[in-house]
Length: 173
Length: 364
Image (cartoon, rainbow over all chains, first blue to last red; front, side, top):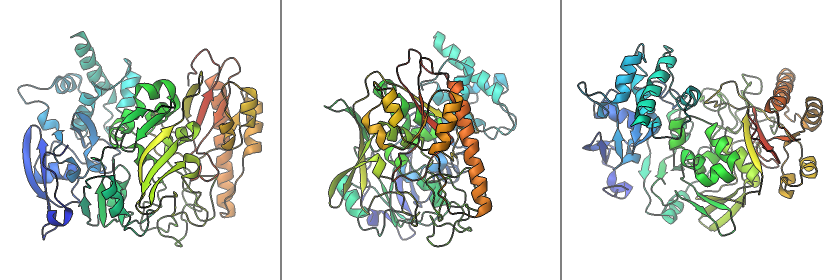
């Protein structure tokens, strides 16, 4: 639930049309005033300057904008930032650091799961969320659940290999 | 995107009261409920939808799935598609619904999209989404660009001379088969609408897609108790193995034969649906499909011929799919789609299969 219940809309709106919102991103709180039209994607990139999340199609078809909301993957281009008052949002910047990569990030590096890299943050966010979803053991199941992430360079075989390596490693734990 | 007032209502009654001030609940509504946003926000970006007020219903307590005393299931309006598809009771007793949901969109979108939103999903017709082009659904009276245009993913059945758009929902196909009831809270009270009466055929008013009036808030769906011993399969024919978003065609017929031949699995209620029954085997399937088909659109001659040819193609693909499915022991496949008397046009390139009395699950 919202940590801070929203006031009635007329009181929310300032003269510039901007409204307040409290977002919690990668464990950090951000109190912002934004145009209600702002998507979560644009808010992350333009307002908070977390540009790791990419804008591809901007219509929920390519998956480049994938982030986690309360641990589940969503297309941030189809979310209004205002919908996420109080939600726990995780972007690629919150997954690992240069010195301590998330196992999925390390696996993508090891398997060369990218070429140009534009879709990669979305692929990795999607793949990390997949680890907690119902998914069969074989490659076909992984491909099906990764079908919302497009890679124009065609790194798919290596992406699947990276994901399968992490899944196998985590199932041995 | 046109700017709007963002409203988070305290409860359902407040949401209904605000939305009841709208002029219409159909295309171009000045007040819109926002749930998953997967359709609405996309259309707002394209200026196809330009609501002045957007009511965020995501925090209303409409997100639970509960067993009902009669053995049926109650599904809240904002239950996410992924949660519904993976719910143990749905997977076990209403498998066709689980499979239909998982055959649509992507994992991300299913995490966002809701049950009520899926019922109101808008067509993927490219002309509807392009404000530079005439479209009777978007702008009544402006004409239909699709009938004589690029229409290969659009409907061949349940169309009119004004619109050949399809309803893109996989979930609705399964809900039709399961005979779901839609529960709506409105300014004048609550009402229950059978899924077969919820969507409207385009006729002369393609901008009207459902029976909903201003202020009507879908609160939940109910499913009747599962059919004991039934085995269900949702088969979707598409051009892509996954994330197929543009279904087009479908078939229709009636299911008297289904009920007579598979008395243990068919129910009287199936008869109300006009769906394409494909008995096992190519020849009989072909005859049934042809006999039950029709092409009501009044589009131009060339376009009509193209759509007729397309219908043939889809029927051929359906026939091919039947032996592929290999239902042993005399199982039957039922090609389906929205039920159909009053529904929005036929979804297609998808065939709902319900296979009764089988020892083995049908592999597709």
